[in-house]
Amino acid sequence: MVYFTRTNRTVAPPLLLALIALSACASTGSQGGGSGLEGRGKNKSEKGGKSSPSAENARLKVERDRLVQANRLLEQELAEAHEDLRRVERQFAIYEERLASENGKASSVAASAEARIRCEKLARERPDVLPDSTLAYVKDLIDTSERLIQKQNYAAAQFFAERANHTMSSAERRANVEGAATTRKVTVEAANVREGPGQSYPVVERLSHGARLLCWGEANEWYHVRTAKGAEGWIHASLVR
Image (cartoon, rainbow, N blue to C red):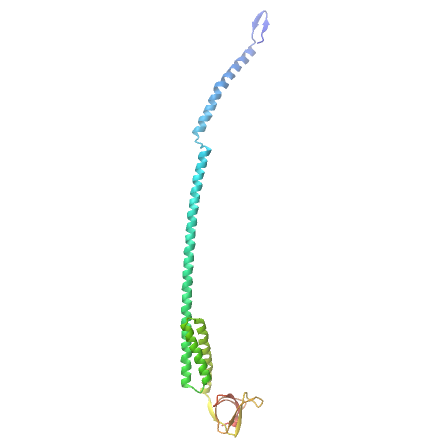
């Protein structure tokens, strides 16, 4: 401590005294007031309700487990929906196959029956138009079609039935043409039936005097004819009457 002496009296300067008093107050506040601020901060932290890291981790784990379980349930529902869809698709495929099978059966049965009816009718009404070889061929096609129907091979049965009907269509057209044909007779000792209406065409058949033939067309003085043996060709108009 420094003292100034004046006129032999010891006196402390006023400024120095003030500094000493302030120093003492600061020391007292730092010791007591610091603990008070610290206490207020601690109480504020406790009142704010902030959870500890361990409590936050536990809450996150519970939330994660809940999401995992929900995702597992969604996956199970999706798998069940896919299985239902596959079941419906299989059922539709069965229905489509059954429908196609029934349609194929009905179509082949109808085509086979149509060919048989047409064949029997033409053979009965116009036996001269349907040669024995053609008749046997058509009947064989129809029999094959019916056997395939019994084996439920409807596509193949349809094919043979359509072949029989095509052959019958050709025979029926021929019958219609010959239905309007006229009968003529050879008036010379010998006459040639040729492949076409002209002398340059090859001879199909030679006919003798009095031979009868069907004539259903004419071109440049040539008749389109069919002989008793079934040969078709052309003969000059001057050779028949």
